Length: 195
Image (tube, rainbow, N blue to C red):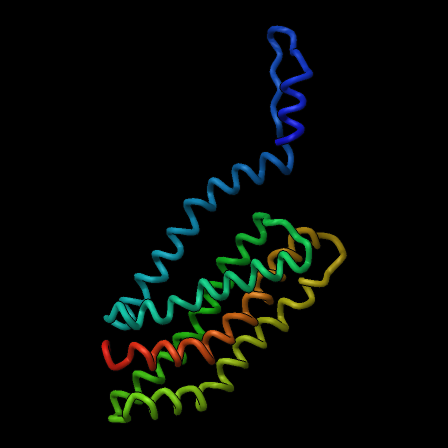
């Protein structure tokens, strides 16, 4: 933008000529416009599918809360590695959202199963947190370990792989914390009011 402003100030084009900006800048600009449409549609579809699964908006929203914390972890990972937002990072955020939702669904489904089996709210949450600890950690660690080589790659295509993998690995760390700590707390706080 700074270069465009300086060129517009100092370069006078003869009549019949025009100046277009292309390359990576043009790809980023057009990609951002597409992402502004694709991301809200993706999140809306995720929320709709969660509602179809649970037939309960509160459980759907409880599971959906995994996405913002996962996204914040992805943003933090990009910042710590000094990487700008790119289209591959945007794709990473979409992939990360799916992984985060799956882990949260495991926890919510177990809590719901325990409640339907007649357990009280506190014991149902405690049992789910203990019994689902290993599956949630395994899901997150397998995905994170799978993306780790891409996150540290330096070879051909690394400029595309690194942001995507960095977002997924960073986001998995925070979304796992949400699944194991915040989601049971949310269920505990709101569980008696809505089931």
